[in-house]
Image (cartoon, rainbow, N blue to C red; front, side, top):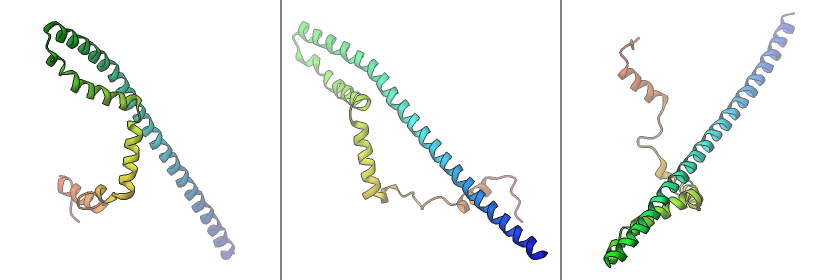
Length: 147
């Protein structure tokens, strides 16, 4: 009788462990999907923000170019056009970021760093551990009582 009961308990425990493993795997998959969705949404927001900024800066750049060109013609001094040079670099950067291939180039360089220069990514003093966190928490806590 005890053997049958213990056999049923063992089978029940095994089934419960399998269920817990499947459940934790499902939860991890959901977390990974959610994190990826959040990353994609943040990236989309960043690109949209850059495109919106480009509209305002493009308008400013166009007006500045027209105004500086008119001023250079009126004063007969081509030096008045000099501010267009740095403004054009900024405009080109913003355009490349919003509509160009800058993001693909950045992604490619990031992949290269991950593959060939991973030592640059190491944290000072190594990765943070639970023991390190507990030590800091105890040092800062006013309620910690040593046993």
